[in-house]
Length: 318
Image (cartoon, rainbow, N blue to C red; front, side):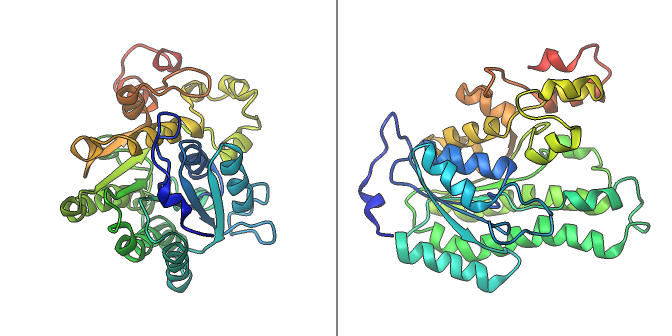
């Protein structure tokens, strides 16, 4: 890999031309779509995760791999580079950062989409903190918090070489929506911590002309969620009969398109630094639409209808 990407410049068709991005946790879901949409906008994207064509992570899914994600980035017009990485292993993350430095000389966009704890939620949801298996609760904090801190700590020295560094924390919920308790203490901590990470790093990156922002999808039609409901992206609405709230669901590309637009925004620091925001708010700001042409607002629906008692349906928020 050489550094020719540095000579490229943004164009209307490739607004992120020449940019170097790392999407940590790009095996599936929002992370995969984020990598693809950043690549579609012209970026060179390093994609990491624990599931490869030769090895599966504890998530237990072998249908999505980081190699496939890199191929999807390339198919979208970008350059995708798959690097197997466990972001709880400091040596592996140091090696990843050293490789990006060696091959590119800098990093412009860091997306922290690390998670992989869905398989633990059945043992923690509906339980008081003292009823939760401690090992499961601590693993949730490892996957949702510690991995993010390790990655940021080791990648930021390279990121701040960029003339306009962008750090994106991907979580579940915003500072407003997460004023409601998120089911279980460990999950609540794991999903609020990235919001505070973005706030704190926004303070630290400001002097470098940088931006740190926490983003959240709404009701995400991830591969795992589709499997849970027994549907595919093509017939996902069949699940609405059993789960009416699923009518407000969005594809992973909705958030990803919005983040790509944010990354190309020269005024992004003034707009977003230190904030938390949602796919819906970003979509309204940048005129982004989901793959079906809609602009779903899941958090608005849940806040106003499901919790607020307003008369309406999920379809009203598409």
